[in-house]
Length: 438
Image 1 (cartoon, one colour):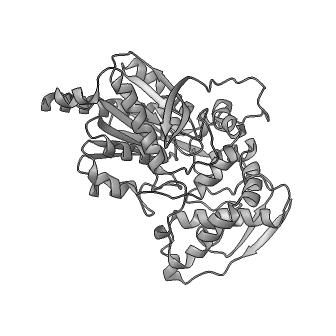
Image 2 (cartoon, helix red, strand yellow):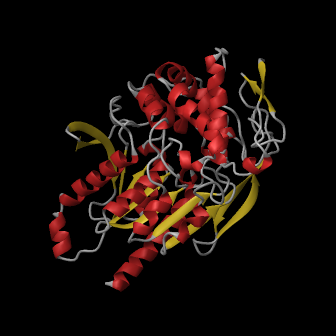
Image 3 (cartoon, rainbow, N blue to C red):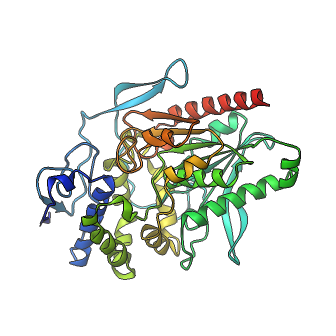
C-alpha cells in the first residue's frame, strides 16, 4: 500500500466556519488530481467520505481535526458486518414517514467486467432536436396509456433515463404516461464535444421535448384559447431537478407540478459566489488547469472504472442503504462512459457555468413543488450548505418537503417504495385541487 501525507495550511477558525460541502468537494477533487500530476500510479478509487463520519481517507480539517491526510491507492473498506442502515417506510397516510432500524446485508458484486452484449436496454426512441442550427437525435423512453396524465423524468449528472428503473412500472400501472429522456451528452444521446453544456441548453431541450409531445395532440394556441389547464408533471434528480424548475418557469401554461429529488444548487461547475475569497484561487486552478485536456483525460480514465464508481456509490453518501447498488445499476452508469465523446462532456460539464440557483427560479413558478430529499446526502445536503432544501419554502408558497432518513443523493433509486408512494399521493392531491379549482 502506498500512503502519501499531505500537509495543508489552514485558514483561521472564523473562515473555516464558513466552509460548506462545496469547499469539501473542491479540496477533495484538487487533492486527487494533484496525485495524478505527480504521476502516482494505481490510484483508482476516489476518496471515501461518509457523511458525519471520519473514515480512512479524508481531506483536511473540513471533516477532521487534523491537517494531515493519508491518501491510499487501495479501495475503501466495505461496511462492517454489523453496520445497520435505516429503512424508511410509509405507514398509514402515505405522507407519514418513519424510520425503522433493520440489519441490511450489503450485496457485493463480483463481476469485474461486463459482457459484450448489453443486459440493460439503452436505446429506445428518438426525438429529433434542432438547437442553434444543429440536429441531435435525443434518446427517450415513453410507456403507459396514451391518454394518461403525462410525467417527464430527468436524470442527474452522469446518469441516464434508466436511473428511473423503479418509477416506470409503478407510475404506468397507476395510469400515467411516463416519459424520460437522456440529456444531450449522457446515456444513449449524442455526445458532441463542441457544445457548451449549460442549464440554458438543457432547459431548452426539455422544453422543446414537451412542446413536441403536446403539439402532436393539440396546438399550443388551442390550449390557451380553450383554457385547457396545464397537464405535465416534471420530476428530476440533482441537476435534473434544477432543469425541471427552469422548464416550469418557461412553460407555466403547460407544467402543473414539479418534483425534486435532492435538487442541486447548480450544474456541476462550482459557483465562485458559493465559496469564500480564500478558496477561489483553488477553484480556478481546479477548473482551468486540472480539468484541462491532459490531466483531465487521466482523471476521467480512472474515474470511470467499475471499482471507483462502486466505491463512490457505497462509501460517499450517494447510497446510504445499498441494497439497490447492484450489477444492473453499475451497468446503467458505466456503459455510457465508454461512448465516444463521454470524456469531453464530463470535463466540460464539470468546468462549466453552474447557471441559475434554485432560489432564483422558485419565485417565478406558478405551480406546486414537491421535494423528496435523502436526509444523509453530503453532496446536496437538505439542511446545510449554500442551497439547502429546507429553505426552498422561503421562495415558493406552494412547496412541500419530505426528508427520508438514512437515505443519500438518489432517493428515487435507493428508497423507491417510499418515493413512489409520496409522489403518487402528491399527484393525486394536486389532481383533486385542480379539479376543484375548475
